[in-house]
Amino acid sequence: MKIFSRVVIFLIFLLLIFFCVLEDALSSSALQDLQNDCARIEQLSLEKDNLRDIGLTLAVDTLEYNWTANESNLCYLVNHKSIQEVGVEISKLKVYQSENDVKEFKASLEAVKFYAHSYRHFMGANLHNVI
Amino acid sequence: MLTIILRSIIIYIVVLFLFRIMGKRQLGQMQPFELVLTLIIADLATIPMAEIGVPVLHGIIPLLTLVILHFILTLLCRISAKFSMLVSGKPVIIINPKGIDYKSLKKLNISIDDVFEAMRGLGYFSLDQVEYAIMETNGKLSVLSKSSVSPVTNENLKIHVAPSVVPINIVSEGRIMKDNLKEAHVSEEFIIDFLHKKISNKAKVKDVLVMTIDKNGLVYLQMMKGESQIFKNVRRVA
Image (tube, rainbow over all chains, first blue to last red; front, side, top):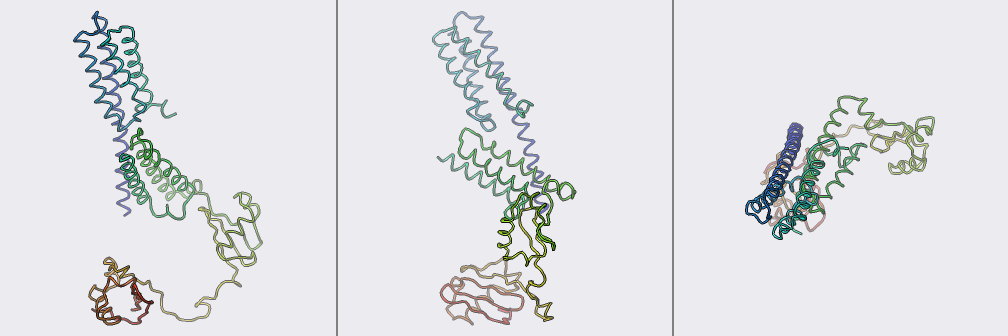
């Protein structure tokens, strides 16, 4: 029993390390994807006159698809309520795009970029979170 | 609803498992740091149960971390007596042959009434019965009574008695305790044969409430219906 307990304690220790690394890797990759997608949309929106452009539509769809996939993985590790704003903002982004509302579209894109930046503060390991 | 049920089951199993690997001391005499740990675990376990937005891992990971911490603290306490004293404190004598040590009571922040209450719990109603009383690190009082009021033992009277033996439970509520049979050096056939001989030919194991046997061959038997019976010098052969 004593040896079993020690083995279990060691396995728990390894498991904790695994979860820490996994959380850091998943959150970094998800937020990096989000920032990259936003940068691409921003670039395309500057190049195109019409927000309903097929290239821009595809870029927004990619943003939504990537975030949905990453969000479902992050939900295992992060409080779901803390990351739901991005999903809401992407939905708004799609509506503004279909209405060709450039001003609101840009505001919404800025909001997504802001979340992508600010989420880094509570995801993964850093001194701010610890204190 | 199903999510909450499943989460509760997961957390319950994890907490149960953690308490098992932390050792049985958790359930009884707890040291201060063990009490703190138990309180935190109880609180942490409830968060992911009720909050669906919070991942189950947010509840499990702190629990696992606390177990690791507990293991390290226990290990350090075992290695270093000084560290153990720092974490758990040390036993304090609060009553000595001269009387109550009021300074120690003040240090421990307990009143005379608390001492009396703890003494009464141990069966001592008067201070003159107590030679020493020690407040243990787990908050329990240990009392050494004065020799004039200590119960007389066989050793005092110089009486030779047979060594005490532990009775082994071989049948409980109609079920044969298979794990105990080997320890008791009996077989299932022995039990059935014993019932047929001592109770009736129709007696079955499922009608037995409890049956124990000890090293000296003393059998305690009580059927579901009926009074208990004691059989001495039973030979353990089927």
